[in-house]
Image (cartoon, rainbow, N blue to C red; front, top):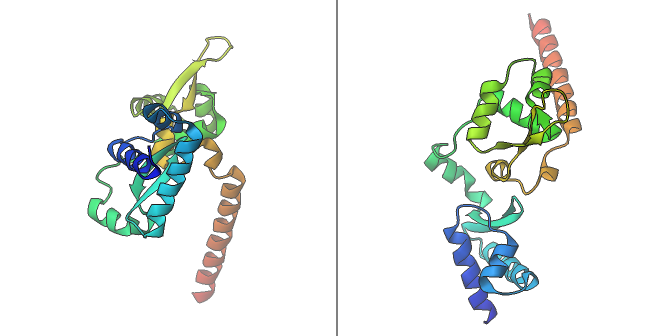
Length: 192
């Protein structure tokens, strides 16, 4: 099979799938070596980038997915104005962040960090498929251990947990925000 036909098939497979496709899945489908598929994928990505296409191919959750070009984001947001993605509450985002950074973690450990009951939030995140149980902790009562899922990676558009920002960056940002707030308060006091 010639290279253009391979790229055409890969393009079709990516187009019809709503989820990222693993390199091994494409390789099995085309009955070709993963190395050859990866070369064709890289060329296809370059083709889109080279002609400033409205479509791009990105690596997400360990696979490949066809997405809109990042430069077109303002217009896409304007059209869809967050209709398609279910918004998560602050409590859900906080709980999800704790699980993402501390996994595997029990519900009780999450509650100790957050300082509030998280039964409902954990249930909702599980229903949404963003977290799942990954066994039981070897302690009295054997509580469930929670981890994030592949859907979590897809939802946030990251390839792996290694792509999460460092926690130290958040501490630095919080400190900067506090300094700015203190300076603004001083300015307001001086202007009175």
